[in-house]
Length: 491
Image (cartoon, rainbow, N blue to C red):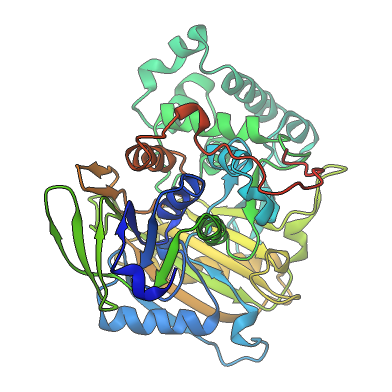
């Protein structure tokens, strides 16, 4: 379609923003035959889930300093005076480095819609706990968390008594939703999971930390109901697509890559894409919305779908993205025969394990370590994504966490940090809003793993757009556009 005809067309739907939800909506409508215009005020894809090379990251930070970018604030870049950083396009730093559990509904939809063929998924490996030195002669260390029965049997990190307790808990979780097991935990449902672990399983502080780390709870206060559900997903995801891993990470920038693949499917289906075109003003008539775009175009549509840009009332997170001049090989070892080499490792620095200005950290810090196999940095380097709850001193906490993590990796030759990007991100509104002419999708999730609740809102939007052709049973289920040799293990 020629650009001149953008203003001449009455669009079935205008989708504003190329974040994950809007992009998945474009994917879901890619075979619908609808007239779709997909715009984004940014000059890049992905919205709050974008991935940037170093030059793009610098431009983003500069823009944040001069204009309100909604969810993001306090962004800064630090480049230590050391050699080793490669050229800007050798990096792809993700704003939303979320893990996707193998049992995630997102993966099911990418498989059924055939979009997964365009994404290269990599294995997420082990979870570790950082242990601070207990005395002046001690060194910090990382302890691998056993999260399968085989792991528990073989670990030497915990006592025989603790092993029995952990085994009992893992067995309980696999049946937690059965009627007889529900009676055991339902009185704890809304209380913190740590209370349940303490009172019912008599777990010590160390074991409780292992379990909470598997939930990736940012404040460590996840409820018993949510915690059991999250650990159940982790345990049942283990081995689903192959031995030794429970979660996946998309190569080249994580969730950003999924959003771009979904947009490509929308384009193949006939959607028209315009980057650098936001909504300057809008007016609603009886059965259509008229939009003036920042590009100068006037556009009419039967329905407008956009992401809610309002900041929600939830807590914010602080994130530090660090490029390190070491492959950190010890983190990415294969632990089970036949398993793929992992490209992501998860490390938790628990509450109280760091001291900054005389104060201990009150929330855990999570480090997602990414090897160069993710395509996010050159060979011989790694990217670290550190996340914690935002507080008045969370920037210092993350800086201390980075230092502590690197010293635990190698006491004699601490890996060098080559680059740091710091920013804070506020929570978005969690509910969608639908009326006759507009749909506002919820803000992006701050969760460290893919939140399948977001997919429910995408499905609701799809039903409204495709109302005359919508068949729930056919949602996101497409045949291949052309024959392929199908030997993919995701099938």
